[in-house]
Length: 492
Image (tube, rainbow, N blue to C red; front, side, top):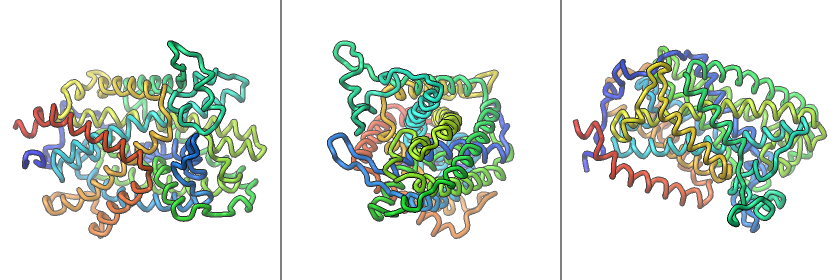
């Protein structure tokens, strides 16, 4: 049993120089990376479900909406993630390795917990990126419609999206789509194509990817500024009533799904091994990015729920839909363009993070050796980049974004909670270890942070917990069949 919880010393977590990734990112790059990851699908897509709620075609209520009180959901999450971010910053500065929460857990809570966190992070990045790709497709089609270009509905909606949609037009695709052997052909082709394009960009190098991300971040901030200014001029105060139509339950459940808007800051910690002076720059990137993004979310939430009745935000492209309902179709086209750019940046960051989780786990022997290979020219984890890209592209073809938001959120919140606990453990197991960034009042910060993550998880629907249980069960099975037997720490 003790073998399952054997820890790696923090010095052991740092790979040999020959196998390290190229350090090219500064503090500014990390903040832009944070904005690129955090400002995306949450504000451009899941905000609609968080405000209006979700109802199945059968009439069953999956979750209650927050209404205009969505702003309180954002503030609640800003506090929850702020506590977790402080813990992340301390560990990222101490352990500047590519594995993120996985590496931190290995140093604090042992191998079995590290495996569980690594498996959670796979859920966060790979599965979460499917949701981002689907949201990207929705805004891309809105953008094309401004030019009078359309695609057949069966080629822009996945099978699960049609199956679970309460929109009669979308649900009706199950009957009207072309069939092969009696099976309706419902595939989201744009979602798959954008994932494959991002995979190629990441294959050739992180420096090129960071430049592309910085450009896209500037565009998304300009477009969100445009939405706030123009939308603010057309706010109807009557739309703020009732402010919280479903009380605290709506605010809590709205926060649980819109948490997807915040998970991107974890991606910053996966860049630690490619960061110059990570002891200084990692805390700046994590905390600075989170602060900026929270302020943006609150302002956009105020404008969106004041522009139209909150029920009108229930769409795959809620901000664009709000402008159309408000009689501003030209502005809607501009926001759709910004959303396409923004979601591309999120895809870039998420697709960037996933292969580095595989890389860290493979270095420790918990995954096959091919997952740790680094391209001799580009110095990127090219094998896992390609494998991840193909899996996410296939998921984007057929899946539904809302059920994926839930799966991604519950896995990420679990990882955040364990990181908070890990900070406390490491304070006692390695009290003299140099800490370039040190959390003040660590006991209340870490304990409240962990409990707050668990409380947010409680706002997710029952099916999310069931699927999360299945995911963890599969992960544990793989660990005992392969990871435990091949663990480099155990064999040494």
